[in-house]
Structure formats: C-alpha cells, structure tokens
Length: 383
Image (cartoon, rainbow, N blue to C red; front, top):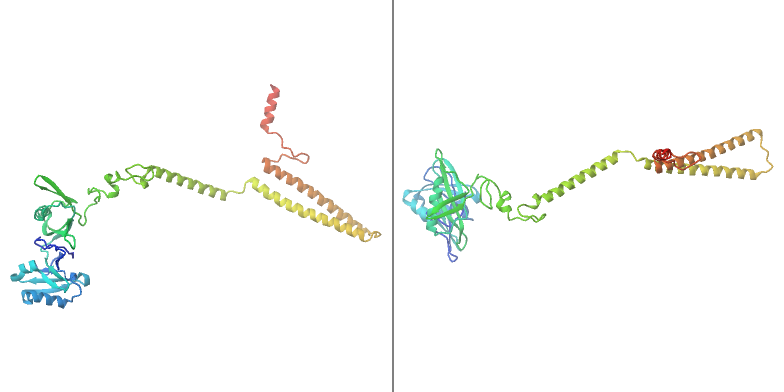
C-alpha cells in the first residue's frame, strides 16, 4: 500500500506552493512489523540511491545509535525500510522524517507506524467531500470514519504542484477481531450542525454500486435515472438504448425468421429431384441429338448407295449380293420407322412438359377438354 500524499500523519498541511523546493512524501505502508514499535519508510520514492546511501542520509540527520535496528524490504520500485527509533527521537522522527537534498530539489520523507493487533485493514478512498475549512473537515471525517473501526490514518489529497483541494480524501481503518462495527456503505452521511452532509467511499470488496446515482444493488447500465436521459437512436424515445429497443428486437426477429426460411428452402430444393418439366426438357434435348445422328447416318447410307450405282450401270449382282441388298433396304426402312417413332416420342414429351399428361396419339396433337368441362356440358344438355 505504497502511496504519496501531501500532508503528514498529524494532518497538518504540507501542500507546497509553486515556489517551494521541498516535496513532502508520506509513506503509506499498512502491515505488521517484526515488533510493535516499528515504522516504515517508502524509499522507493527516492530514486537512484543505493541502500547504503539511504543509511548515510539517516545517520547524518539522526545518528545510527538513535535506532535499535533497520531492515530493507521489497524490490526495486517497492523498496522500503523497516526501522525502529529510540524513544528519545521517536516524536522528532515522526514530525520531521528524513530530508533528502537532491540538488535541484529537496524531498522530505515521512514514516508511518506499523499496524498492531489482529484484524482487517480497509483503505477507503473518499470522494465528493464538501468544501469546508480544513480543520472542520478533518474533524468531521475523523468522527464519522471512527465508527467503522480504529482509524489508523486519514488525510486530504491535494493537486500537484499547486496544491488545490478537489474533494478527495483517504482513510485507513482497522476492524479488530471480536468487535462489532456498523456496515460500511458506499454513501457515508453525517450531520454538521443543522445540515446533512455526505461523501462517497469506494473500498475493496464493496457491493455492486452505481456510478451515476451512487446507490447500491445495480450498475450504471441498469440505473433508471441514467436511462431516463438516454435517447434511443432507433425509435427516438427516451428511457432505453438502441440495443434494448422493441422495434430493433422486432426487426432482428423478422430477419432471423427470414434467414431460417431461406435456409430451409435451399435445403429442400437440394434434396428433392428435378421437376417433371425440367426432366422432360433434358429428355427432349437428348432425343433431338439422337435423331440428328440417325438422320445423318441414313443420308450417308443413301449417298453411298448412289455412288455405288453410278460406278457400273451394267454390273449384275449375284444371288448372294441381291440378298445383301434386300437386307440393307430392310434395315433402311427400319431406320426410317425408328426416326418416325422418335418424332412421335418427342411430341409426346412436349405435351407432357406443356400439359402435365399425354393428350396426343398418332393422329392428333390437340389436348382433350378437362373432365370438369365434359361433366359441365353434359349437365347443361340434360337441363
């Protein structure tokens, strides 16, 4: 719990003016020492000095014989000294601390007393403190914070380097084992004459609290007072954010439903076979290709026969050749019949694609009237 403030342990102001060259640092290390009369010095605030140089500075101001012992603890940026002054210099050591002359500036380092007894230590950072006179303010804060435990230290925080007070404070309290204390809350109130005063106190392990209204039990994002000043960009109404707008939620729900329906339709189309119309088109295209190949084969056969006839008009075929020619002519007739059958099959598939059923035969291509129309005509004739 190292820290830097601008007032000493007796709460007398050490805030410096811009022309002052002395910088006051108060050690804030709250822990038990080896024995009960120990103190701590936060030497990490004095950079670029070795442990030996720190001991030389303390000896120059107080002499080493004025202390019963010293021990360096921590590392680098958290280096501090556990030190035990004699009774003869203890009060002087508390009020004057150790003065370091760093050439361009001076630093006055004040010690803090080690913690005695067993119990829970609580560091409370007070904010929104009323702007009273310093003596009156410290008196009120000591009294009200003393209700929550043994007050180890309290002080006002000042802005650096000019020393403005901006309404913040700190307090260190110790709650001893076996003792009963009032519950520490985020908002601390007290009475100053006829006026009711308050300040806010963030502290470790505190319940959930709102940074807007400072009530406990909810956060700023759930605070009704904070939401009352928010305007929704979606519906232009106050009291909620765009993400919580009912119109926004309805649009998102509709979009989700549309996406789900589109996904289901695409999945259904992928799993179902091609429609009858599509399959009829495929079959028709295949039949046209087969028909063209067959027509080309017949034409080639006829052309070949004409060329053979023109080569030798006086040629007389033998009996076996005559039988072969007759067989070829039969094949040609069969091919022509097959072409006609292909044409008929092609027309039937066109009808299937167009009307959904076969309405034609070898003599007509006109679809008959529907059964409903026939029944209707018969009924009309009977009447």
